[in-house]
Amino acid sequence: MTAAGRALDGQVAIVTGAGRGLGRAVAEALAREGAAVVLAARSRQQLAETAAAIRSGGGRALAIPTDVTQDAAVAALVEQTVAEFGRLDVLVTAAGAASFGPVAGTKPADWDAMLAVNLRAVMVCCCAVLPVMLQQRRGTIVNVASVAAQRFIPGAAAYAATKAGVVAWSRVLREEVRAEGVRVGVLVPGAVDTPLWDAIPGGPDRTRMLRPEDVARAVVLMVSMPPGATLEELTLLPAGGIL
Ligand SMILES: NC(=O)c1ccc[n+]([C@@H]2O[C@H](COP(=O)([O-])OP(=O)(O)OC[C@H]3O[C@@H](n4cnc5c(N)ncnc54)[C@H](OP(=O)(O)O)[C@@H]3O)[C@@H](O)[C@H]2O)c1
Image (cartoon, rainbow, N blue to C red; front, side, top):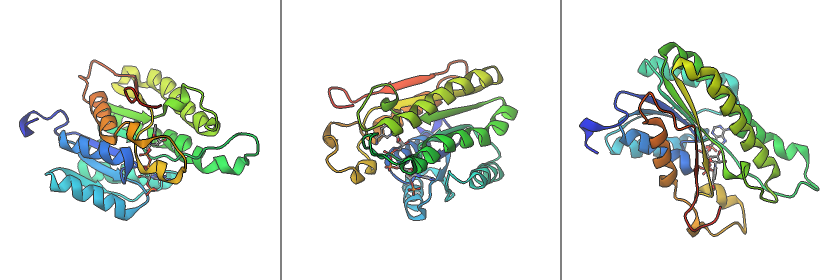
């Protein structure tokens, strides 16, 4: 698309988990569509790499190292974004983690980190951007869930619970802010070939997964719908591949 006709010109987006994986692809795609993108994750080095990739393509990026499980850090992320760019149009919550194993023998402490980043942090990020979006009477939130919330995959109970929580949270929040001009969408991807799978030995065939760029394309679609239309829930699966 030419620079003159980009879908997100003049808009400002925060992408959590923008250092690698699908969050990075989303951040790069939003920038290509003209958005100024604020990149949030813990690894400074990875954020710097994403920012450099965006800038080398002529886009605008601001890296703000953030642990999204820290409420004060999330508040600061939004404050800095508004201070720098004067507005906030898009939030994509792609920060997340996955660990798998059967429920029998699992220790509750194994769930805590995943619950904190996959569910509570999503809720905190939404709360942090809402005052700005409501005041603007404009904004789009895309929360990244997973097909694990819909299909029952043995070994994924705790992960599925976090993602089902994201779906339920998004559904209720959507109804609360719908009339105020704020859209809340949920993206439900199947397996995506990202570094998330590096730590999961014996996982599925990565060549048959979605590419991060596929996910980015879906997010661009969700956030660039005309203001009068909302893509509320989008399930994206590898065609002919695995979940
Ligand atoms: N890959 C898949 O098959 C798949 C499928 C469906 C849904 N998803 C979901 O998509 C999201 C992204 O997954 P991915 O595959 O892209 O994973 P990934 O490659 O491991 O990337 C995860 C990103 O989240 C960031 N992150 C993790 N904990 C964080 C924290 N406490 N604060 C801030 N950032 C944090 C990581 O950066 P730092 O570690 O530097 O903080 C990294 O940038 C997750 O919610 C995942 O559940 C993935």
